[in-house]
Amino acid sequence: MEIWDLHCHLSGVPGNTPEARLGKLLEYADRMGIARLCVFMGLEWSYDPSPEKMRQENDEVLRALKHFPARAFGLVYLNPKHTQASRDELNRCVRDGPMVGVKLWVAQHCNAQELDPIIQRATELKAVIFQHTWVKITGNLPGESTPMELAELAARHPETKFICGHSGGDWELGLRAIRPHKNVFTDLGGGDPTAGFTKMAVRELGAERVLYGSDAGGRSFASQLAKVFGADIPEPAKRLILGENLKRLLRPILQDKGIKI
Amino acid sequence: MIRGAPVHSLARREFLKLALAATGAAALKSVDAAPISKRKTELIDVNVNLSRWPLRRIRGDDTPTLVKMLRNQDVTQAWAGSFDGLLHKDISEVNTRLAEECRNHGRGLLLPFGSINPKLPDWEDELRRCVEQHSMPGIRLHPNYHGYKLNDPDFARLLRRATDRGLIVQLALVMEDERMMHPLMRVEPVDTAPLADLIKATPGLRLVLLNALGKLRGKPLSNFIAAGEVYVEFSMLEGVGAISSLLAQVQVERVLFGSHAPLFYFESSLLKLKESPLTEDQLQAIRYRNAKRLLAKSL
Ligand SMILES: [Zn+2]
Image: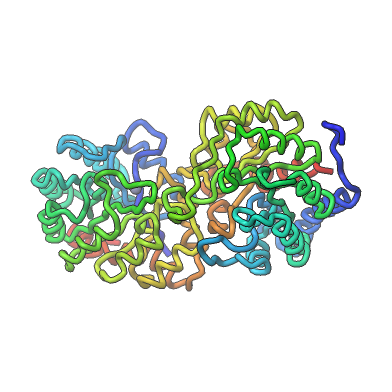
């Protein structure tokens, strides 16, 4: 069984260059038996990047990918506040480049209309949309989306494949919010390895909609893999979550790009 | 009682001797039975809890299931507190039940660490009961759930009394991510600012910080470690290659294995030992040697 990690960053990893950091991530991934990593966002993060900053972060990911084409995929980081620049960046990195999906973070609430032209273009390119979500009792960031807002967006774009980042953080709420929308998959990564998380995700969404992701380097591969290895779910469900689901999600765009998996 | 002269009942000393011997015996047995490639060393988990998390049922929130789960993971000893210690006011009953559960279901695996709330009337007698009635090797503290700060004089007194009685003190800084707490059960993480001075002011204190490494890093962490005999476990430590990074800040002798099971998946801490490249010596120190040495000082 091949493990694919949906959710990695170049931040929080030692190394002075993008390729040094991705190389380091892969060293640890090798120790944990992880075959492929999806990487997004640059060496230094920005909540609300300008078009220029967006391009710079994506350039850093492109540069890292070039060194490890058989081991890593990239998602293009976009800011919906800059709609046209985001569409241009999509064309540059996905249509004309090797990237396979979109990362949206905390610049803009994801139920906003500004997202629609970006989602439409991404869908034409068969790119998956990874939207960060969190429900924080301590208070969300000003532009930070909730899984309920992602549910609204997903209802407007039933043909698009969305991934609910962190399962909403407060997963007992997040999983319920996305449950009715079959085009929304969920990311197990980036939160504490709280027991019961994965079992609830499988119970409420079905194993086919649950994806392993780590949020490394800020998180360990170990703590996030534990959510699957330690879960009280059948072995075939674990295989789906650890790799098969992500392969299935990416297959259309990888086929278009002539990438064999 | 004379300050500085540890008071140990004979029964407790015998109990702890047995506990130390038991981890060795269990390990030997598994070595004998297993082929060389499968040989397991000991594994002491210093951070598990019995009973129920107040907000969710979890696998292992009954003692027999937890014991089975820990044994399946080759844990040879687990230091157990009780989730009931967070909110129950009748802490005597919590500690009695904890000791009974460990005795009745643990079969030498579970060592009880009683809850002490220094804001409860007559808490000092609770401390006495932990030692004299329950033969506990240590106590577990939850200042944020018990409503006091570390600059509270009662906390300083509790550290001294526990040290006088030869108890290991486990201090839990958080129990879960502050961002996803139940709206009616929100508590702030323990503010550790006063801790370094308290450690220095309590000679002989053996302190284990639980659930601490989510936020505690760098200089503040190394200050605590340098201030006295302070240990950390890594159930909440995150970051790629996290144990390697930790060992760059803290000497390996002060690092203990802790899982925060059953609230956390046990596999998380176990896999962290795989993710970081560690020498056999470092692995042994973290898996059991440090905890064993710490426990032996309670004799
Ligand atoms: Zn992330």
